Amino acid sequence: MSVTVRWAPSPTGHIHLGNARPALLNWYFARRHAGRYVLRMDDTDHARSTREFADGIEADLSWLGIQPDLLVRQSERTALYDAARDRLVAAGRLYPCYETEEELDRKRARARLLGKPPIYDRAALNLTEEDRARLEAEGRTPHWRFRLDGRPVQFDDLIKGPQTVNTASMSDPVLIRADGSYLYTLPSVVDDIDLDITHIIRGEDHVSNTGTQIEIFEALGATPPTFGHHNLLTDAQGQGFSKRLGSQSIADFREEGYEPLAIAIVATLTGTGLPVEVYDNLDAIAEKLDFSMISHGSARFDPAELDTLNARMLHAMPYADAAPRLSALGLEGEAMWTLLRENLVKFPDIVEWSKLLTGPVEPVVAEEDRDFLALAKAMLPPEPWDDSTWSHWTNALKASTGRKGKGLFLPLRMALTGRHDGPELKSLLVLLGRKACLDRLP
Image 1: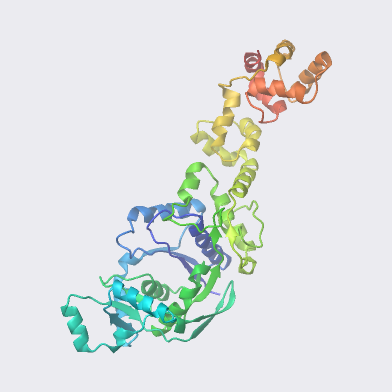
Image 2 (image 1 turned 90 degrees about the vertical axis):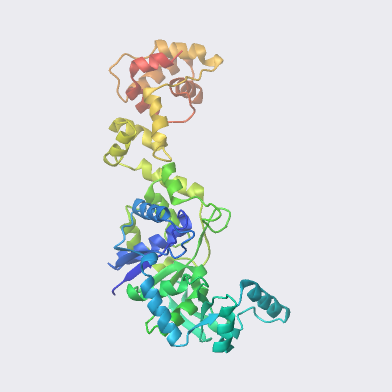
């Protein structure tokens, strides 16, 4: 099967986890079928689209591991849309309408009062040439609507199964604004035809749009692609992610130090039959994730699950992978990495944890432990040290003081590290060395 998919963000803000879900699901599908991945910038909204946001989207995709085979910008393809517009006008499928927004609001309100659906009444189809000339003489410029067939449109959804959208219950959609600019629908269909898109994979909030789009495909003489509508990812409160509401962006997660693969896994495997666990790479996910595994219910993002997954990835990260990133932070040493990685949630945490070895550390000493720690300092074994030094030292202290368990180990940990948690003291002691231990013990 020849596969070409597209992901089509609007560069009107930073992308978030909800946007990353379809971006990655399209990538998996393309990789699984050795297909092509098209990144299409839907930048026809000239007032809100910026090149800065577009560049940011490219950077976010690259960070997640997605390298598109083709990048197109709708702002550079207007001639194609103009040609399609002219064909639809000539075929009688695109017609001019002159109502103002206020007039349309009044029509909708009147329909509701009469118990009718608030859909457009197609009054503009009854206008004569003289009517249109008079309205334009008044200074009105038309917006253009696509005349729907008004029929049940059926399609077999890759994820949701057989679907029917009845366009008889819908208003004829506006495809061109009164200022001549295009809304999303017509450029999207024209690009899908021109770029030979075979599969459109997107959120289930677009199911209702599909009937209209299939009719436009057919009106332009094209066979519609196969559609697949996945469940939406929501935030921890069950609300949809939104640029306008300031949802945490992919760039925010990157700045906070999360692993891109952890973000990809949580963004796509939440709400599927595959477990949210560590995978080697995106290709490994693509091999396992069949769209039949995507739930028909909502998928809720759990920040704690992301932290747990991110930590697991770091705990298993070999030094060879960590070394360049450590070097960028001014750190090095395989023994240091092996000891401290088990305590990390995010990679930048290593900076703070490394201070256990390099200092400064503020020892925490309870008054009732001072005599015990003074004895521990006096009994600190001579170097060289190895992994057995800790047990020799603590066994001797146990025999001398009768302390054991938490009463023995916690005062030593608090004096040597200044904190209750941390790496295994047996290994930490060897890396610290005798002088550092003497300096920290009171």
